[in-house]
Image (cartoon, rainbow, N blue to C red; front, side, top):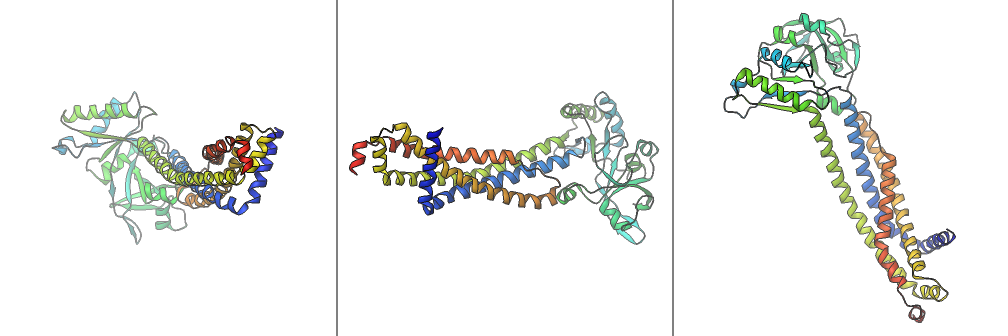
Length: 397
């Protein structure tokens, strides 16, 4: 241990003696480490923010819709009456089978007019969304096809200002509906935009009876984890039994979509980090070049060390420690810069995505390992070259 500490002291002394050259040599490590840490940190934080927010939505549905590429899509048209047979076929898996329409309707309150999205919901599926006022649609509302609705917070502000929206009435597509609840804002304005911030939810029975008699666009099936594929297959088989074997349907799991989205983010982050890794390779080549220069400058010193009994391993270890110290210093400074940029970037992302998590421990571990490996990998040759010098020939130079 004392020998290692002595080599460490010599390495620091040597680097300080040539501090300008050392600083320029570390510049590549600083840039490479900072870029990798920034890209990796922000990509991981972004993924965590999306996972956290979508995780608050509860169970994701399996979406069943007509395949528009078939020759006669009309024969596969989903009807409201199809929902009950599908629900009966899936009763052993889930009771959550809901028809869905994708519609916008004129909605008014006094002189205020808008065309928000009007969606159908059930009283027995928990969508995981928080409420800022009132309650959600319940089973009694669905059973009675009640004229009630739940609106998003931006619509509450638009129609009712800062007052209490619950208890007021909106006129939707000519019908009168009592507001029973207001959804709280989804964490992050990006997800508010992506999911839809101007939305009205009413019981699906009310939607079918009083809002639109047109066929549903989709069937949403809220299956337990791991049952998405089976639920989709049963639903398609039931619909084909009702409409004929020639009817074709598409199924999509929104949880699979989320996983694919996260994979894309990870791939992009890895690709950008790899680009930053090129800077580390360039920095490693620069360090190797400087260490070769250092070996040439200190040839006589190496000869003296060998003459007084230093072994090849001692010489190799001396130069390896000097290189590792150089790379760790550069990597540490670059990591610090990268963390500062990451924290700044994440503070901006949190406004769009909600709460995000920065994996500090993982970032620091990656930075340390990369710096150490670069130092060892690119200084092995200069260190071995120094160790192979003949003591007598070295003293003659």
